Length: 204
Image 1 (cartoon, rainbow, N blue to C red):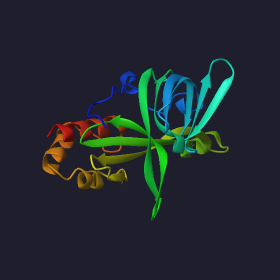
Image 2 (cartoon, helix red, strand yellow):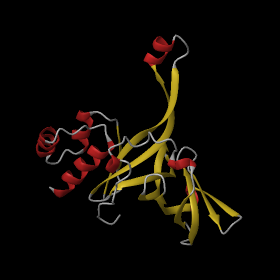
Image 3 (tube, rainbow, N blue to C red):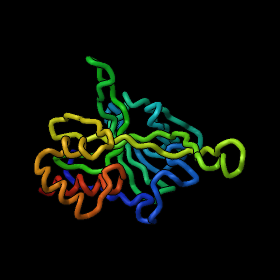
Image 4 (cartoon, rainbow, N blue to C red):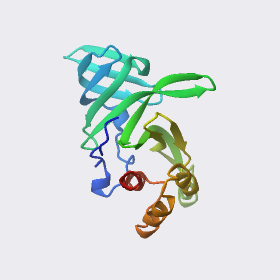
């Protein structure tokens, strides 16, 4: 991966929590392009599904091509909901002890230690709604994120969201990382702060 920070505005620039919009990006087509495993470039309206690891591309007015993550190297979209460019790779991931298969990851930061993410839509319940309305609890959909760190050798570690695990992953200069997190009052389970921490770690 080329060392660079991708512009990652999303809803953070609006001061809104990413993933709580009325629409979900994975359910919508966006302008973009895709590179297949045969090095072909396909341009059109792109829709991704990380849960099934499938990408669809509308070419022209009628033709719809469907690609599994096994047939993709990379794709990029301009997310019309989040008003941001987003980049994705299909990267081999160990799903069983001796078996790897390419699945979709979004790139949040690229460097010597890169930060990737996968998303899924989950249902959450408001425990206070039932008591207030004396009826069934209200539910809503939201995005849930799983983060992964990968080094230049391709070693990937799934982050469990806990602060101590983050410091274990970013073990080099961990003292400076801890101080940076503390002095800037960063949360190690929020996307924008994890990106900032990763960028700081790569700058050391």
